[in-house]
Image (tube, rainbow, N blue to C red; front, side, top):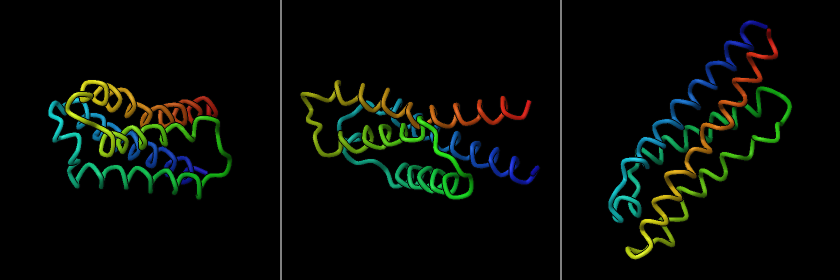
Length: 119
């Protein structure tokens, strides 16, 4: 049982760190070119986040209503690559800034549930 809880906490921590790194990148993006050409390390962070989400779903049963929130964050990362123009950069900058917060929402809610459940 303790290994199960430790694994959950570890996966939550990895998800939170990876989500935070992605958010940090998008909050520092100012130029249109930076939004169009996302660095490979950010894509690797996103892939790592997706893999931790898959691992959490595979290892731990039960889906929550907030498990789909990170799809919003992934979409907010991808939409500017295809549809952004220099004239609409500000709008897409806001989209990525606030849309990527959906990476940490499921992690925070899962962590809250984990710690409230074991009290």
